[in-house]
Image (tube, rainbow, N blue to C red; front, side, top):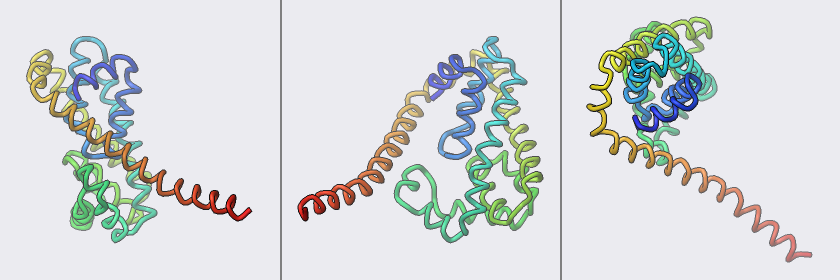
Length: 215
């Protein structure tokens, strides 16, 4: 994963970093713990400017959070839990109780949990769902999400910046495992999309064949 992040961000810069963090917020199994230290490392060698890298990552976080916030505004808790319980999403690392955990956090701590939970892996993304379900105001949601994401991104990017080449060496051993996991996730998404398309294409083809036979 780190090698991919380094090459992708080196080629497309801050836009690539924002896009990766956007995806990380929509699909929590993608680890920001791998992406952000890599951005910090690139800042330490002069490929990026650290404050701009943190800002790009925070913008990506906010845009990704809007997606799940919108999902929460549209779907009920019961429908979301059923959705998380489907096989494709379970294979991606989601669980039905992820939704109930995020909603529990929100009910217990109120709207400020959107700010606090931005620094807790997995829940940091899913906390946007109960914010949407509750009808939390967009401006307050945006402010809390931005500030919480800014703190999280600053810490991880700074760790990568301070570690420098030591971070690159320490992460090398885990790169192969993470890359394999990423490929598996991509493969699952492709298979699910193919099955979804096939289920809709096959009936259409059968109907077309019947129509031609009837003629």
